[in-house]
Image (cartoon, rainbow, N blue to C red; front, top):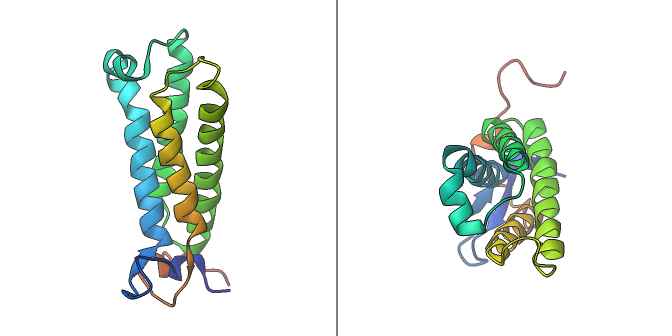
Length: 149
């Protein structure tokens, strides 16, 4: 199996061009950092879109955790780091998707979270679609001093 950094997501079979694991990590990392920052910067605007929260402390905790996950994904460069980024990205997306699936129908959270469900499903699909294509991007290079012996 090829190192994860050399994996790509094919844009189309004809194009032969795709995204590297690094690019998926950067995309989801950015999504998580921005999504986590929003309620920390403006709880008022966040609640205007997603509905009022009974426990602001809990929303801030989740926001901080999302930002932490996102920063880790943004900093992932080596193959080993990208493997971890993939696992954490899949776990985070699956967790948020399941929360959306369970609590939107119960009316516990706003139906606006259905758009988050779609986004989380897209991240799962993006990671799941990473297949070996032999394309080498920046993710294929290991950080200096972090190579396995």
